[in-house]
Image (tube, rainbow, N blue to C red; front, side, top):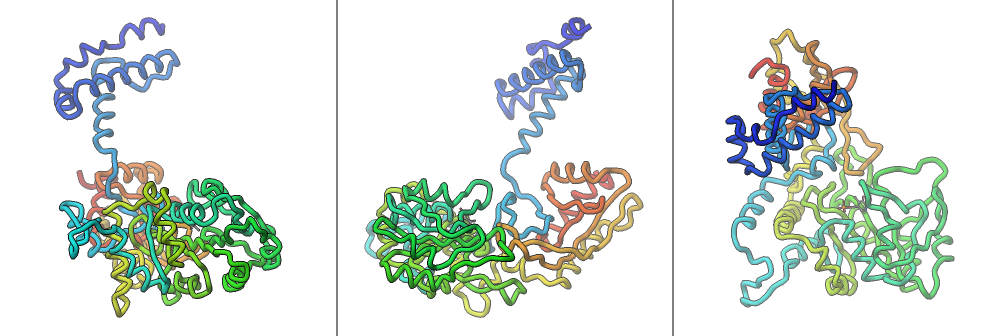
Length: 464
Ligand SMILES: *Cc1c(COP(=O)(O)O)cnc(C)c1O
């Protein structure tokens, strides 16, 4: 039986002559089209052997398979998506969106030559870090500022420069994993430092740190446990207490703040978090934080603190391997400028604006979307009061009141509906709740509403 079927499988060369493939050969080249057809035939052969055939055993069947595979290939790759999840800092959707003024700077620097490492006054070689140093110093109230590729790199560079071959004292409650693969113990090991754990998971006291100090201690490390909270019977040491201990023993205190804020976000209803300047004022020698979390800038790792230590970091060979590129630097420069503007200038930063939006504003947006969708018997559209999340491992326990548009249709399951929305030309990512699709208006922009409405209508076949 199988043998008969196997004989029916078409030949590659016959298929390659088919006119349907001509445009694909022009687009992708003959080799890639041939490979795709061969893949289709291999898949078909396996399906015959397993008796589970999904591809039609005809020339047309294999051609259809090849064309749809190539169509998908063309559509894959990095692209803009509409984030309707309500997670403001969505790590999988590119974290922070950048501001309009940063976009302009980005284009200017990307398309032309720039004074990236050129001093226009002297006509000699300059430093790429000079554009952000002053602003970083003003915003953090510290002696010096520096930037690398991301915060993981910042922690690595700081520890490698300060405590290579030496013991790094850290509380057991702070040996955390952040994001997919950033683990503090592993970063310490990579830096060449030796982990000296103190205290317990839930309680660490100042005496625990004091007892651990010896002649081979290189630094005390404090890590902000951004993405979870230990509650109940807990104790940790305040940063100023750690700073006094470090000073007494002439040891550097390094603080990985994670998200890093220049201003408190308490007026947006968020709980208090230490700001960068507070950490410096409490006596930290080095503070590191991300550029693309709550700061709302590009992927980058900012380092502020003591000038002598930062000068040493600049000379570390690792700096070259961890260095920030010019496009991120251009965006970072503009982001810092926004924070320096008077009268809440930082509220032009999209992430801050997204967090600040109130329910009234979100309801107006929700109504605009539901107006686009109304008048179709095939679907049910409603507004829903729900909760958004900050995301990016920040404020894990906080929820922000929001307005969502819920959509459901008898003609399609939620699973298929959401899957097809992700396959649209501008893919849409949303939540599913109580058998409905939920589009959170906090993370959707006004200028995305038309595309979002069109995507929903296309999937539901209300329009072509
Ligand atoms: C997010 C985070 C990091 C990693 O920062 P990236 O910029 O993503 O490399 C490191 N430490 C803490 C505490 C964090 O929250």
